[in-house]
Image 1: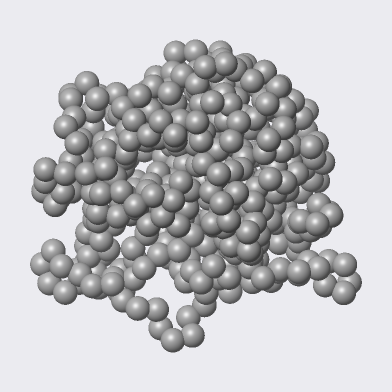
Image 2: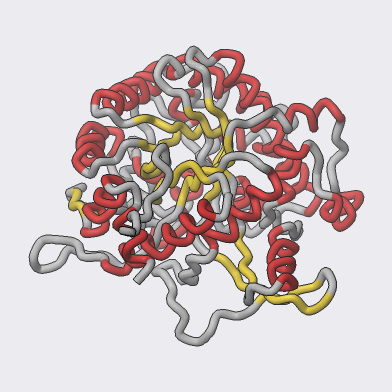
Length: 459
């Protein structure tokens, strides 16, 4: 019997992802208001003094970038909307020119048979609302829901797939705890838990807003970080240790369960409630019901992970990376197992269909003497990770799609332009785009429904 080639499920969704502040530029034109990232970078707090003022100039070059996606065979594109481009002060008057831009972008995508998947918040919080307390303000959930309603009313005649919020763990931890991202605050435990509760309420109110005004039947989810811990061995004890580690609730908010349990299970995890005690904000049953508005899918952003081993009943230790372990240009360990254990944990706990909404590699890419950009490490990285994702699917995890981060080299937050994640190389001085070797490889991955990646990962 001839063995059939291994592929992903026939209806698997392939795509790429970006975010507004990281690529759009046009930071202060066409009526856009400032975001916390405009303020943070203007204060010189980003590496090398970089800002998102121009970024990839996508606001002007979106048609060129849509053409690139069509040439690369990209069928699905996850983008985000800039809140202050729509509502310059965060609430109040609508900037019609901002809506016109996204109208045109969505039309350009659909003209090229590329389906838009829209994220409503990817960290560019309006500075005018930050000046009123930001996520600490009890009105912040309502501010967000009002903004979401404006966007969905305008775009939902074409857009059906919506993400409310991207990576709450990251913008809360690094922005409000460690102060290394915008807005650069260091809050008390009580304050950070209150801010996170408001973010969850904002998510729940946004889900209700989407479902109430969407013109086409919406598919709604959100996209937290999938914090992956992998067992050091396949023993039952180590697997349980990894699950225990992924259920943790540290006070720096780097947690799966503190954010996903309220959304999918309707309550904060008991372990976190015990640990945080009186620092947990007072909640009402109505608030928890709002947060737990039913979702159609769970997005997970997974890049790396940590190995753990059991040290006894309900105890574990994290293992250091071995000397010389493979690392990306972001100094993140290459841990392809994370795309097995992370989705598996979340599927087993929440029983909700999963999309990998970000995965990719920061690499040291440059234009070679032949005029091309050769990035074999990225190809190898992607093949490894896709192989593990396929293994998870084969083991019963309901993973329905994969969005590679990112289409373009872009503004990488506090690291500015020092890290390159793109399938397409961007010369930030000239804005020239050059598709890398990995872009052509990924085109074949999509064309073969993953077969090219799985052949490479099985060698």
